[in-house]
Length: 110
Image (cartoon, rainbow, N blue to C red; front, side, top):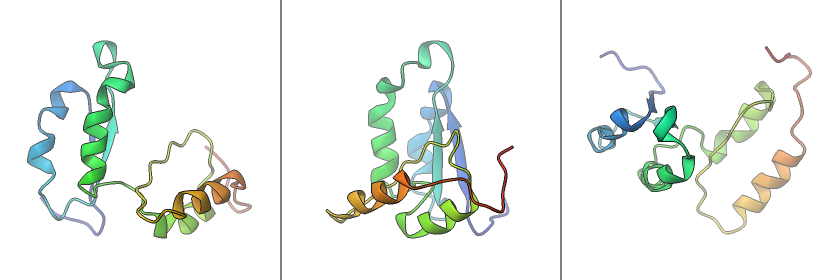
C-alpha cells in the first residue's frame, strides 16, 4: 500500500466495523470516515459507541485547526462535520463560525 500525505479509511456497515480495532493502531491512518450500511445497520444511534471509539483514537477526518481552510474551499450543503475538540471554549467558537458559513464566491456546488 502506498501512503499519501493524508490517509482516510472509509468504513461502512457492520461487516467492516468488525475490523475497526485492526485499523485504529495504524499511525499512518489519519482519519476514519464512518457511514452506516442499509437495513439493519440503521438507526445511526446503535453506532454511537463505535463513532466515539474512532474519535478517542484521534482518527477524525477534520481537525479544528483546518476548519477555516475547509470552509473557504467547500460549500456547506450536504456536509456533516464531526470535530474533536479539547478546549472548553472551542466548541462555541466553532459553532459561531459554522452559523455564518456560506458558499465560497469562487466555487459552485455540484
